[in-house]
Image 1 (cartoon, rainbow, N blue to C red):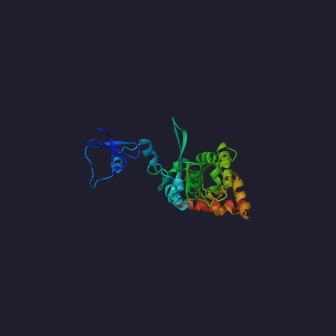
Image 2: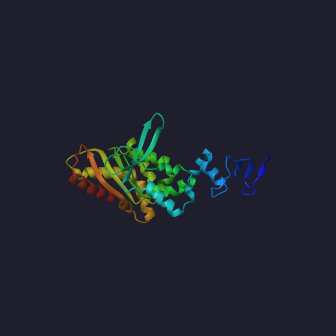
Image 3: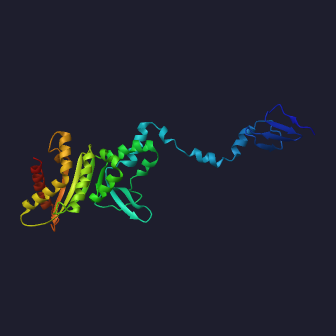
Length: 286
């Protein structure tokens, strides 16, 4: 029985009553009848039952993010990295990472770090281009909260290139009665770094002093203001020179609370402390 090529289909060979059908990629199918009527093309039938290559399947899942329009990428950056809540910076010690910095959304006094409220800063690690584009959204459009100057100093040391982009910062500051103490020296070194935050709009501070509360509150606030001035004088004067007004830093400084040692938590007392503190600080700047 000789094999003959059918004229009806160029991709099939008849051998007696058996038809051998060849697909476009070299696949072979066998048919036991002559589908001379209306039928699905053989090549289409073969493609329907073909098994996809797992390698090609994996490559199909790659999304060309950088090919999106810039406006759409910016919308994604803002959705993933910008929040109306405060962003609290935590330092966590563990055996694996040694010391790692976490950025957490915070809408109350303290919120534990979870996967649900952690900022998606991993987006900045995708590639150099996404890092460059997304950094502006993260650092310029958020308010960063630091539990103390230790966290602030650590953050500045690790991300020093982004200090200039910060616009809103909040930090708790502990001031020792002795200006030359290591605590005050550390505070001074940290606040000096703010000189490079040229776009800083608001510096919110809670000041805790080691000066013990006494009857003469005005005199005590003068001492606290002097301690703070000696620690922050380089930043205060740098802002004044940059803006052409020696008191310009007072427009950026937002003193939310000044608390003396052993002083109770009373809103009226804190408000009076703040007013007196700012008056004394303004005198130092004259």
